Length: 232
Image (cartoon, rainbow, N blue to C red; front, side):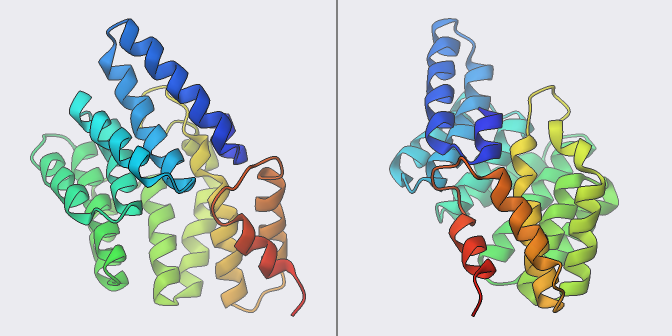
């Protein structure tokens, strides 16, 4: 499923995840089902299947409150416009002991600020998260926030670091569950940063992104990347 999402084959990923969830539930393994449900929520949201995505996210957090489930579920809620649900999950994580839940809480709250059109506040909160732990995901989200602010130099720097540290994206939650699907959008957003800087290298980033998604079936950002490669 992670490979299918990496390549933008959303339909395949949904089918694989749904099959896996059925198997987990038959084996009464709700923890593993919750992981897949959180990923399923994101895949369905990307396909525009909002009702199914919301149900999957709700089921994920009802089955497990593990940070590695809560974080992607919270991001799915934000994609679906449910800021209040994401903020509630951030509050729960902030009450847990340990650096990981504290970082995840702040990353969620930063994305809430970004969804409200407050990139400066988002950057400040993510800076607090990075002081706790310098995470790959934090660097990626910082790059996105700087783009929203129009700070292209800073965005470029953060996104380049993500590519330099791409190995960390293979298992972001340090639980042996693959998460390489988070990497391809870095190329797209790096292209946006380079485009903002007036660099012709932006085209190379867009092409790399589209090559990865060549066999996809509607992955977000693909149409925009293609449009940016067309001559004016």
